[in-house]
Length: 213
Length: 213
DNA sequence: ACAAAAATGTTAAAATTTTAACGTTAAACA
DNA sequence: TGTTTAACGTTAAAATTTTAACATTTTTGT
Ligand SMILES: NC(=O)c1ccc[n+]([C@@H]2O[C@H](COP(=O)([O-])OP(=O)(O)OC[C@H]3O[C@@H](n4cnc5c(N)ncnc54)[C@H](O)[C@@H]3O)[C@@H](O)[C@H]2O)c1
Ligand SMILES: NC(=O)c1ccc[n+]([C@@H]2O[C@H](COP(=O)([O-])OP(=O)(O)OC[C@H]3O[C@@H](n4cnc5c(N)ncnc54)[C@H](O)[C@@H]3O)[C@@H](O)[C@H]2O)c1
Image (cartoon, rainbow over the protein chains, first blue to last red):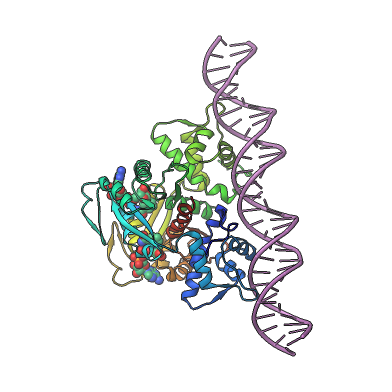
């Protein structure tokens, strides 16, 4: 199944950021037993226009059906393939503090294909401790684990001052993508990806929203 | 200090989403003792162009200085005022699971003006338990606390199926903004704001980034 | 078999966002 | 005191993103 050369060429960032939401919605609908969904219905539940939905889905290798819409199961599969979450992706987590431990204990990531294969921390008091099924490892072990297990993604949950050095260690060890939970802005080589998940920034955006009625 | 009518009218969403990052950067620089920062230097550390930075900052009620740039302290203050984080904002947290407990224990939110005044959960096994300085309260207490303490923001950290009913309860009780940490898409009246902070969606976006070299 | 209708995929227009260009201001210094 | 220059604020162009319009397809029903 060679993916269509045109559709797989490059999907705009604005679209890529919405694809996970369509995937979540398709999963929820399929689990509820819904077999078909229209662009209009997807748009209404996600706060978009049906036009945007159809435009977005034209980027993935999947066809809707006139008069019916999109098969929820088909859509789920095609979106997973497009995003690259149709197979397991190995991850490591660095920083076993309050947030890091919550992430390590969150089984849903594993069910969705994100397999955490190691949890790391620099504090001697934390190293060796158990977090769910993990034993926290020291930072000296990081590079070896990344190499041996071909780890693709590093999840960074350390204090913001430590984020850039940790990012550098992860990239040097061979990780290709970083999920950054800190307030720091990470500089990485062009061939690596960074996605920020900053809760404080979201709260501040919300503060602006509640200020002006 | 009446804010300028034009600048305060309405700031585009694309800009509002970047303002928290400028604020974080201004804070970090000021704490390091840096007094001035140029649009070019801000742009380089945040991965933007200097043009975008100047355009963005033209929306806030603050002037740079020719040949020097922006005063870090002044910028921090003006951004805080624009976003509405120059005074405390009361919040409640609903869902005292793994993630909710991490958020409740995160002192930085309080230092940044987001004061959590209550933690709530529906599970009898959890209600009454201590989470840091909080005692988890039952959902029957929620409306009263929101009303009495004039709570502005609700942080939702419950399983996704429960997110919409919890959102409804929060809005009915009088909250004006929701921070949604679940995969659900929340429907709220037009006068309320929702900001999503979805870690799984960020991971999926990252998966696409690491897939295509 | 044919007509009607519902929903797609696509084209093109509208709106927004980003970037470049440049005139203006104020600091530094001869 | 005047000149140079770094960096701002603003205008306008370029690029991207969103929305609307509509021709096409496929099902349903007569
Ligand atoms: N806790 C939250 O709810 C929350 C919410 C939003 C953002 N964050 C951010 O996530 C990050 C982690 O937050 P937290 O509350 O878990 O902090 P924390 O202080 O509880 O944990 C940080 C952990 O990182 C470890 N660490 C420090 N330097 C390290 C290094 N160089 N290499 C490896 N490990 C190192 C520490 O030993 C500690 O265990 C912070 O940047 C924080 O701002 C946290
Ligand atoms: N744990 C993580 O690291 C993580 C990461 C990303 C997203 N999330 C999302 O955050 C949410 C919470 O995650 P978690 O790991 O803390 O889950 P959890 O199961 O540990 O905790 C959820 C809590 O919500 C409570 N709850 C359930 N229904 C409720 C209701 N109707 N009203 C009030 N409380 C209710 C439960 O009693 C429980 O204490 C989930 O939607 C999850 O997908 C979690």
